[in-house]
Length: 297
Image: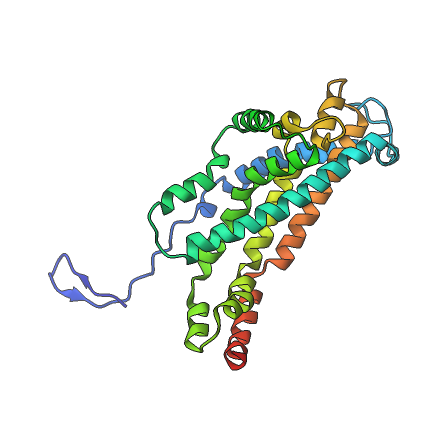
């Protein structure tokens, strides 16, 4: 019920008024078909690629029946296996290194209080997101050549770690900002030690952000082509660089099979991240754990 001024009598009316519904794009005419067209535009190429990965014909664009022989050809190709091994090795090591650095950076920015140069520091850490990748690739190559550092896989790991840090840090920082510090303050009121508070409250609350950041960093590293193309040397060719070499001779069914495998792996990682990164479950666990922290301090 709300009070309104009657224009005719000038008296205040207390009759109930209908609650105005907030604006919602979903109620606009044509929103559904437009959304469907966008989804088709995004996912039809992926669906076609996966379908033709099972094409028995050597000609990529001519369907010749269902077959999984190209997946067998990929599995039996030693060069592809080696390139996939290099990509996974570099991706895992770069993800671990970048995530550890990202956790420290996010804690410093969100729990370290205000300090002079904070905005500049955040900008410097996230700069690889806006710098053109070709610039990063060339400068990385020049830097390694200037210091005479040519260690194959280690060069790739260092280069990938640098540009993966912001991808890993932003979800962690967003997570810390979203949950606030009320749980930590409650634990301090109960005389919990700082390390115990970090290990049993802050870190569990960060898990969804850490998982999202680590997966994002791994997928970014696994998919990187330009920096890997510049930095890699003989024997350290990553899978995207190897696929690029195959594409120079034309699109083959093996390329479709490799792409389908990478797509399934990415979808599986996203599913794992979704299952693990459930904020409500983490918050419940921390809330249930807070009295025990005080009792054991």
